[in-house]
Amino acid sequence: MQELMSGNEAIARGAWEAGVTVASGYPGTPSTEILENAVKYKDDLYCEWAPNEKVAFEVAAGAALAGARAFCTMKHVGLNVAADPLMTLAYVGVVGGFVAVVADDPGMLSSQNEQVTRQ
Image: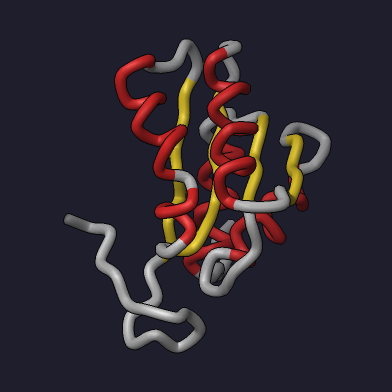
């Protein structure tokens, strides 16, 4: 059966299909809809909103350090807030799996500045 999904719905579905069991995020368009769709798989996937991007990153990183597959979501400016745990996790590594989903906002439609996270 085929299903038509938005990109954010597909990210949530792909994470679930890949065996992700922990998802954390900080709301901010254009990334909010990822966690909003991940909660559809709540029987297999624990989801929570965090008070900021650093905490969202650390929740998912902690789960990955303990052996779970995890991801966190935030918009591009939020990665600046999560920079400290990002740099630490880069050299510590994880036991499970970890993905940071960072959503860009080209044209600053809902952000205070424009950054490119693909570089």
